[in-house]
Image 1: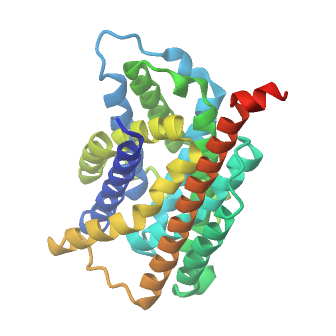
Image 2: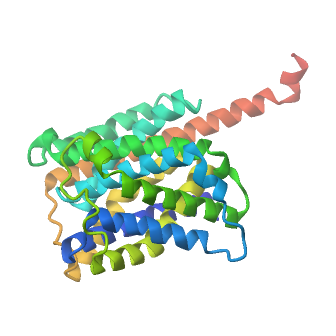
Image 3: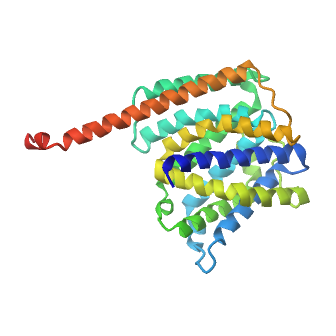
Length: 325
């Protein structure tokens, strides 16, 4: 699959999952925490059982790096889902853009891939868009959604770095990679079951729904089954594949179109009375414009930086250059 198509598909599937979560939360009597847990269970089981006759990789259930990844994904999912209690899905997409400069910093100081200098201008513009929206939310920067989305992005970038460095994410066997992804989802589900006291302790704000009391509600089970198999499992497969092939920075950059995809999907859902009709004022559109300008600047900078690096490499390998060394 071409890299651009892979990255776009990843973002689209995540957007479909987020809007489906919002539909489940606003239109049906589901337990948000339990539903997310069941999504991981059913999505993970589907991936592990997808290749009958192949050996289940039990060893991966004992690796500390997998449990660290699972814990980070729990924090990411809980924080983002909780933010949807305070803001719309497109607004959460705008606030999620704070993850892009975090990815650039992680690439610079952890992965050893410093971006071009002009790219930081794009990050500054992008952050200004997210700050503009946050400032105009009810309660401003003290709105719970701001802290929740910040926590979500910190843990998301941390887990993405772990995924890029994870040796089992480098395998070329497609079925083995699916099973590896399924194991990660099942581990994450296990963390969900044992983590409510921990999550409640470290959460930046009070999250009212962190409880396993509604684990066996009928609508919660059905929502977890459908969203888990249709979206959560595929989203994780595509995410790990994108990080492996394109790297953390390009993966996060590709998710920058998420607010706009979410906007279109949420408007479509509202037409069928599945979610409240989104009403976005000038603040949202100004924030969206700033985010888009930042994305364009970052993309153009990456292209120039890649072209410059390629030219320098070509110059270093020319016969004239080699003869003088």
